Image (cartoon, rainbow, N blue to C red; front, top):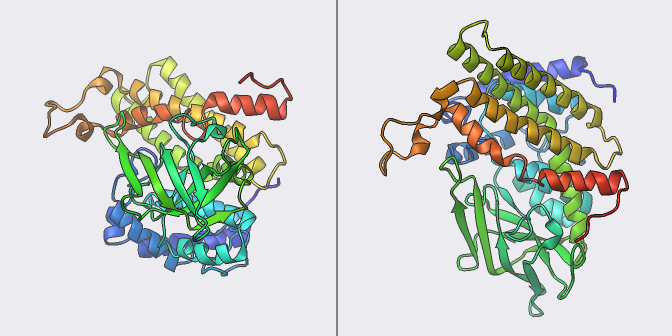
Length: 402
């Protein structure tokens, strides 16, 4: 596509910048830079309040394929959305806690849901009041999503599904109000058949239990979620059609959102470059490190051009998988580079580790980046699964024996 910023975009840029500076004050200013992958646990209360502030400003739901203002949101063009994201990242505004509802569930409801479902759930997301998490992966069905074993049985008394099973790697589950769950509703069905996409309230004591998963960083961005007869409020796309809905949502997760993600990557790369200068001196006489830094910069630019190329929809069904392979590997290499520029000092933590001073309290930004980015090539669909998708669905190679 022909991507460029016009006069309207530059006018929006000035308005967005002014709004952010005016509203990023008080507790919101203190939450600047908090949140995002690897630090979802930071400042959640302030970031939830900030989500509502964004909602009052109409900044949530800019890309929804619905009329402008239908749910209190302002509709922006693709270039306008990029402008907003750039200004948001430049001012280090708080990491979004509502992105799963805004960028994944809402577009899915627009594509597959009913008018009644859109009118019920989109306003809460647009106001920043209702947070969502994603119930896809299971201990035995992570990247191979078709192996889902969580079951849902329709109760003849009220027609609602009762869900039993376990989900894992569920981001923001501790704070979410709702979860969209992929469950097997047809007994005896296998693989992608017999699955249904369900909307489930999280506030069901005794029926929904969330257990945080402690990670390498010492924090708990991910969670296990256990369902024991949990009641689903809605079915999206019809019973048994969950695979179609789930795949439509994953295309959104792996494709469109990567451009905004890269803006955050650029900030991290700048921080690594600054650390390189600080620890080795301006000019940096290590040619290998210099080569790696330049390569990271060049690859990030390439990812941006690729994302811009596919932003309007390229029709290439392999594009989301290519995007995931690109950014997952790039970010993991950035984490490795972040500690490489520090040298031996990167292996050191707090002087005294103990129960009162656990090691995660002493991790600096580079160490945390290194540890968390180990997961980038796994979550959201592992590299192996993405390559299988490209090989089988795009290149037409024989399917892997299962």
